[in-house]
Structures are given as structure tokens and as C-alpha cells.
Image (cartoon, rainbow, N blue to C red; front, side, top):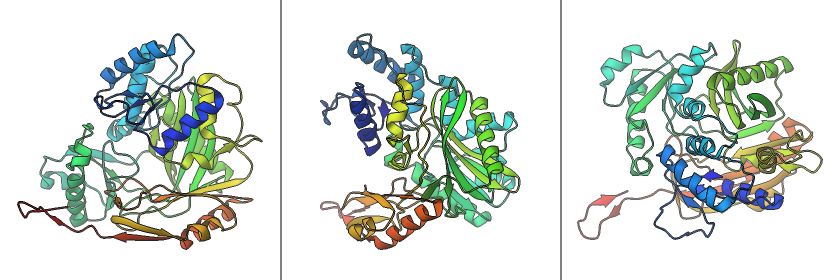
Amino acid sequence: MLASKLGYQTRSFAEAARRLGVEVILGSDRCHQLDDPWADGAVALQFAEPPEAAEQLARAVRVRAGGKRGAILALGDRQTVTAAYAARLLGLPYNSPEAVENCRSKLRQREVLRGAGLPVPNFFSFGLAEHLDSVLPHVAFPCVIKPLRLAASQGVIRANNRGEFIGAVERIARLLSSAELQVTREGDLDRLLVERYIPGVEVALEGLLEAGRLRVLALFDKPDPLEGPYFEESIYVTPSRLPAAMQEQIERCAAESVWALGLSEGPVHAEFRLNERGPWVLEIAPRPIGGLCSRVLRFGPERMLLEELLIRKAMGLPGADLRREADAAGVMMIPVPQSGILEKVEGTQEAAAVRGITEIQITARLHDYIAAWPEGSSYLGFIFSRGTTPEAAEAALREAHRALRFTIATRLPVAHPVSGTTHL
């Protein structure tokens, strides 16, 4: 299992594996010089160098697995390329490195999907070293500017005119040059993608691939408008309230997209915009839904969690063909209203008492700095609901969110004790 350090999603999958009696070998992007700081026996990898990381992981797996039957899962975008190379070395079913690379870069994905005749917005890419006077003649407003490889809508900004475009590019450039991103050694941090803004509502599809065939696990409505200037997501509700014919169009578009990209195995998370012309592909990612959002999905009469279903499918265990429960369900990724230091969280008991709320998880740590979008990529937490209808599940989320109160203090400049210079 390849994951970014020991996050809450990693723990959820590890717990599901333990319940099934499946041994986990974790590959994580941590310092190889630290002696197992999380006591999880993880293989320290550098996801910025996928072929080398894959060889290192394959060597460790051969020693530890001892010939046992195996499978591979990647829990985030950065990990998928290493997983693909490692699966090839270990002879495990997974997507090819070429297919995963098609998804890893937003520019490459757009090129592949456009070449296959699939509905994507008009786009072009440019380098941050280029003068904007040479770029602006190619821009059609309104547009969306985004980094090529970041996830969770980090750095994604809508611009409606020349001034907003210049301001957005400068803001994204500052984000990409930050120490937090530069240390990842992520590729393409010096290029941006410009797309024509597509009006409409958004939906998300969670699916599972086997030998190239797509099985749709859930289709989520996103009832809050995502019109910019930033695109922080909030509420997901399933089942979708869209007409059956539109849902069929989305599923068909998703199946054609994964085929065009060359994906063949494992979880898929896809995002679409819908308008009078039908579905437009925003993103196809060969990984499960992020964060704790997977908890919103339960399968079969025993309400199996998505993590367990994916592990059963990967390992060839029975029970991987269960359908999602009949109840409606929703999750709110609690938005970050402003950047600053999280000082206090109030109202959790009141929010948890709302009818239909099943769980509230505040994942942001007190006294830590949190960044709002577009610089941010992590939420304050997650609220989960269930109901007899999607409307009831959505209403419960909104009522619970209104009960929560977050105190976020502005982070002030700090004077250096020696030089007198200030730092943020």
C-alpha cells in the first residue's frame, strides 16, 4: 500500500486490512534515515523518482512477502506512478506506467482525451518563464488556470479578464515556488494549464476497474456551486438526483475516458461538469476518493466500507461485488473560511446531535496553521450523514455545519531574535 506518510486515509485502509487478516507492507514518502518513527515498518520511498522507488519497494516486498499472494494499492495521485512500476516488477495486476502517466499530468490527460474525441474544454499550457504579453493573446475568457500536477483544486483559479488572469498567474507562481511544494520535487512546477471555463454543475464518480471494464460504485451530486474564483469542494451526496438518462451519459463518458487513458485495474475517481451539451471530463484519477470521504460509502447488508471492498477486490477475496446500500448518504468536507491558526472548535456536540448525522471528524489540529484555497489543500474535517433521501442527507450536513464554530487567528509576522528580520 503506497501512501503519503501516516494520514487518516492510510490508517483506515490499514485497519480494514487487519480486519481481513491481510498483511500490509506500507511504502511511504518519508526520510530513509529515520528509524521507523511511526513504528509501522514502512519502506521509505521517494515518489518523485518512480522507477527507483519501485525497484526499492519490489526488493523489500520480495523479502517480506515470502511468496505470498499479493496486490498493490495507491492511495494518492503521487503514489500511482510508483505503484505502476512496482506492480510490473512484481507481476501484480495494476495499471500500466504509461496509463498512469497519462493521468498524472493534467496537460497530458487533456491531450489524450482530446485525441480520443472526448469532451474536454479548450486548453493550452505555458511556462512561468514566458512573458504574459505573449500568453494573453491565446486566452479566451472566462478561463481557469491550474498547476499541472497538484490535487484537491490547490492552486486552481478562475479569471474573467486580463487583470484577473495576471493576478492569478502571479499567485499560483508564488504557491509553486513555496518551500512546501519545492521540497516535494514534484514535476512541472514551472508550467500552468489554461482551460476555457465550462459552466454547469459538477458530479463525482467512484468506480472500480477490472480488465478495463468499469463498475460504477457511486455517483455523487455536488449541490454547492463551484463557479470560482476558487474551487474548494464541500458537499458530496449519493445517490445522484440527476435524470437517469444523464447518469447513463456520465457513466458512458467515464468508461470511454478510462479506456482512452489506458486504465485497466483498481479504483477510479472521476469528476465531470454537466450542462446542456452533456458531461465534460474534468479529471480521471486511478485512485480511491480522498481523505475520509470513503466512509460515506457502505456496501451490502453488513454495510462494508469502501476500504474493505477495495482490498477484497485487489486480493481476490469474496464480497467485492456487493452493491452500495440503499440509504442516501452525504459527506461535507468542512471548508476553511480563512487562512490562519486554528485556535478553537466549538459546537461539535450540537452538530453531532442533528438528526441524520452519523459522524463528525475534525482533522485539523489545534494551534496549527491552516491555509484557505487556492493555497490550501486540507479541510478542517468531515461531517457524515445518512437519510432516506438525498435531500435529507444534504439538509443534515448543512444544519450540522451551521452548529460548528471555528476560531481562526491571523498569523502575525515574527521578528528574528538576532537579525531583526521578519518571517511568516
